[in-house]
Length: 428
Image (cartoon, rainbow, N blue to C red; front, top):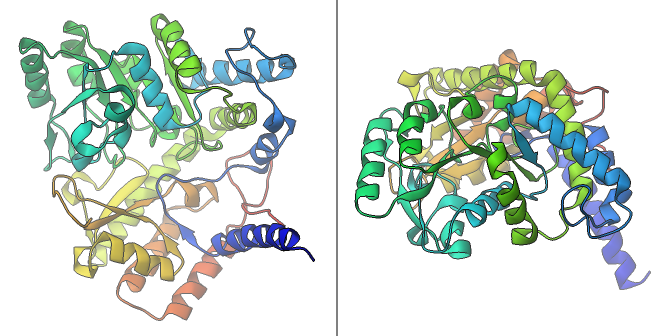
C-alpha cells in the first residue's frame, strides 16, 4: 500500500472517529449546530463542483440555470423569514457578510460604532486596537457602544450621547452595528433607531448567533425595530451549512451585491446556497417550535447550574433570552482550564471573557443549547446536562460521567425539526 493511499485512508478514518466521538459528546459550543441529511446531501451534490459568479440571471459562467433557481428560492424564503425587502445568500461566512456591508457603505478611514470585543462584540466589527477585521480589511475607525455590565447589554441613553458627541466632533459613524458573540439579551435597536437615523447613519444588526431565534419569532425582530440591514450566519441557531447571508431594505440591495461580488467573494459556493435553501425551508416550517425550545432549554440549563452552586452570569435578569449562557469558572482555573477539563469528559464548549472584566485569561465558558435541541432534547434533559457539567467541573468519576453522557445521547440519535427523520451522524 502506497504512502498516499495510507494518508487517504487515515483521513477517512479520522472523520469517522470524529463523528463517533461527537455522537457520544455533549456539544455545547454556541456557534455550532447540526444539519439534516437532506442539507448534507445538497452540500455534497454536483453543485460543489460548479462556479456561479455574480447574481442569479447575470452569471459570468454557463451551466447555472438550476443553481439560479435554487438561489432564487433561498432568497425568497430568507426575505419571508426575516421580513426583509431583499436578501443575498452568497456570503460564505457571517464575518464576510459584515465586511461586505462595510465595503459597500463606507470608505477607508470612516468611523463605525459597534460593541467592543471586551463586552462580547465580534471581531469583524472591531478596530485597530482589537486587531479587528473592520480595520484590517477596510481601514475603519471603530468607536464602542456603551455597555452596562449590570444589565449585560448596551446602554441606549449613554450610547446615543456618544453617537451625538462623535457627530459634533466630525466623526459621524457611517454604520452603527448591533449584535454580539456573547449575546444573552436583545439589543436596544428600537430605543436607539430614531436617534441613529436622525444623523443619517445606517443600522446594521449582526444576527450571526440569533438568526434562527429571530426567524422563529423569538428574541427580537430587528427589521421591524429599525434596522436597515441584518447579517447572519446560516448555522448556529439556523439549520444550514456554515455560511452567511444579508437581508435588508431594498435601497441597499445594489451596493450590497457589489460588496459581495466583486468585493469580497468570487465563486460563492453554490452547494452551500443549496444547503441554505433547504435549511430556510426547514426553519420556515419548524422554526417557531425550535426557537421556543432552544430558549427554554438555555434557561433551564442555566437555572439548574445555578441551583447546583455554579456561578451563571445574569441571574437577576433571568440568565438569558437566547441559546447562550455564560458560566463563571474562575473558581476552576478560568475559561481555558475549564474548557479543557470539560472536553476531557466529552463536554464541548468554549472559553469566554466576562463582559468588562478585561481578562488576560478568560474567566468564563460559553454554553449553547442549539445543537442539543436539534436532536430533540428538552428542558428535562437539560437538568441532566447541568448535573453532568457540575460533576465534571468538580472532578467527578470520568468513566461514570462519560457513561451518563452516552446514555443521554443514545436517547436522542436523530435530527429533530426536519421534514424527514435522519441520524445526526452518518459518516461511514
